[in-house]
Each structure stands twice: as C-alpha cells, then as structure tokens.
Length: 255
Ligand code: NI
Image (cartoon, rainbow, N blue to C red; front, top):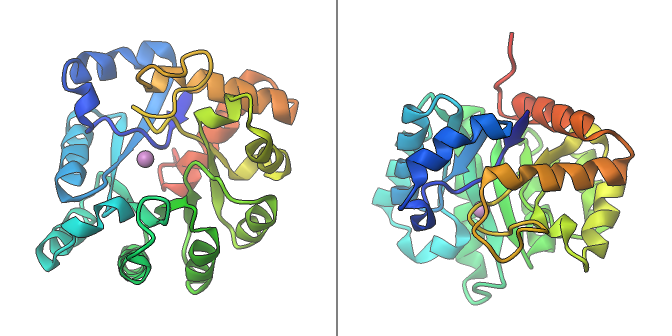
C-alpha cells in the first residue's frame, strides 16, 4: 500500500471528478495522501478534503509562487488552519527563483516565518526548492530542531548529503522515471532507505508511461517501482519503507 505524501487534489484539474477519483484510489493500493496547500484558499480546500476523506491529510502554507497573495490576513489564516488536527505539516513553503528571482528577500522572509510557525506547533515542513538550493540550505540550517522533506528534490548530491546529515527526508516523484533523470537517480542511490518519500505532485509530473497526462496517486506505483529497481529491493519493500517513513515524519504512526 502506498502513501502519496504530496498531491494537490484541491487543484482545479480535479474539479470534474475529484470525489469519484479519491474514492477509487483505495482499491488501487493508495492508503494515505497528504494534500499541501499553496495559499490560504487552497489550504482551506485541502483541509476540507481531509475532513471528508479519512485517508487524506492536509498541509497548509503559502507557496513562494503565491508571494503576491501574502497579507497579514492570509498569514493569520494559515496560522489558524495550521492548528487543525487534520493538518500534519506546514507546506508547501520555500523558495522559487525560477518563478521569480526579483523578490528573493521577500521569499526568504515568508519562508522563515512559516518555518517558525512549524517549530511553534511542532509540525514538519514540506519544502519547495526550485533553483534556490544554496539559500534553502542556508535557511534550514538556521533551525536545528526543524524536520521535514525537500519535496521533489532537485538539488545536487552534495547538498542531499548535507540535508540527510541534518535529518531531512527527500521526496522522489515522476521525474525519476524520465530518460534524462541522471542527477535525481544519483541522489536516490545515496539516499538511505529510511529517508525516502514517494510523491506524485498530482496533477503535475506524471511518471513514465503516463507522462503528459494528468497525474493522480494511482501512478505512484511507477515511482515506487523505479525506487525498488534503483535500490535493489522488491516493489513491496519500496512501498512499505516509504509508507513507514511518511508515517514517522508526519506523526501518523500506528500505535
Ligand atoms: Ni506541489
């Protein structure tokens, strides 16, 4: 059974069939899902899904691409939603210099404020880092008690080693199945099995052979199979270890 630790079912791409799709995932082996918000309204929608479906949990946060939606009110709303019992993490948060390299300081400030919220509530963070590897590493290093995942990890092997030393988890997504996946596979090879998470980032990043189509959590098996192949373990072991890792990081262990 699979744990998709990153899927945006609050996205418009699922408006036509969201409920049927979510209801069908159990029989396709998907046991747990985290839906991370990107701004206040999408975080609210993620929480609504988490209230409705027992296997869906939410994360709430302001994504760096949504910097222009930041206001004291939207931040207040994130802080209040973050206390909801179905909210298991703060995310997705981070830095995106591909999207916007002209507001780096504002992005960093927003990232730090949300890290501080996560620490205050003792919840992990889901980090989005796109072309901002050095600054992301520098910021997370400032918070020794912080835990979380670098979602769809795209940094270097050297940085991965640093993050692993600091206790971070790394998220692997559809791109590890792509032909040009050299760097991501190098990182996967060095990542200890107990720090790997599998994600779809649905509706984006569909793995091969579904590349180009809308993604959903039933495609997680292609990511998990690739992990099994690279790590030399069975697909069942890959699913089981990533399930256990997700449960541990997000505080959903079965007692
Ligand atoms: Ni995402």
